[in-house]
Amino acid sequence: TLVTTTTEADSLVVRLTGGDVREKGMPRWLGEVFATIIGNTAPKGLEFARYSIDYHYLRNWLYVLSDESARGGERTVPSYAKAVMAKYDVAFRDGLYEKLRAAEGKPEVSTPLRNYIAQAKERQRA
Image (cartoon, rainbow, N blue to C red; front, side):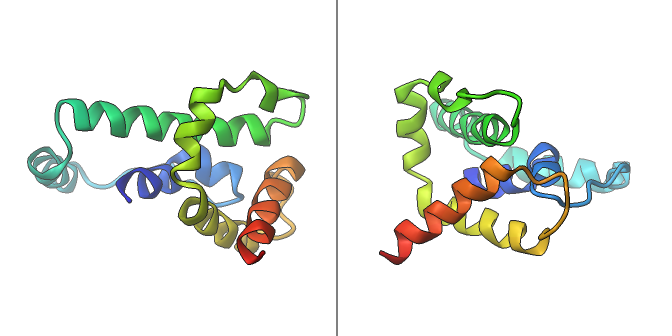
């Protein structure tokens, strides 16, 4: 979905999952072309609001999981946010799981985040 694709491409998520974040963006002219295409095809109004809320919940959830200093961080996530995240459970975690496998051994990938993805894979197999 658009939400999971956007979240997986987010530079914060890429960094959390051990990927390399590019410091330099695309050329300005190409950015303008993409902006026009996205502006004409992306969700608008309430659909954009839903997309944006879901995207930010997913990204921030990953940050909570990755911050090992925030013990009990999962308890601070409200139930309505967890309900939003449950909609994206399998596909989202599958994509992140593949990124984590590619980043195996990189120190910037936290243990709680690895555990979260591994548990999701186990539940999926069951």
